[in-house]
Image (cartoon, rainbow, N blue to C red; front, side, top):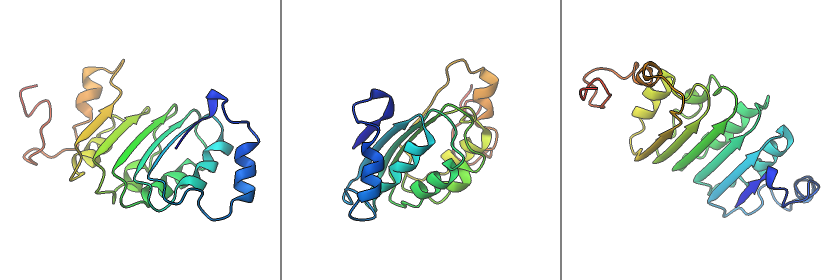
Length: 168
């Protein structure tokens, strides 16, 4: 399922009504994939009613930082079968991001677009994902130094390739 707040194709009153009158904890409990693109904190919170136990793929785009973004990320990370996660945030990546997703060893596809996505701790975390096959970060307007910094915390001799380990 996909929800894009800015598209305006769902009346603003529908999600609060669904939330208030939902028959169970999760709407569509067999849902496996969720795309949620929002500008408001209220509608960000409403994605929780679709984060059922079978969700293994999440695309989350948030226009502004919500005070409860860490809580929502923890709920997404609690899905240990999460195989695909794309996260776009127009403000800084939360400080606890890598700690929150530290146990998500099943991630095969990862896309991060946020200030801070090139931090060395993100590089170290991503390099340790055992089944990661696809990784995307936004490198537009980033300096070579910033991109190389992404690899700073990856230990030499770890077996992971970095620009300097393969000749730059």
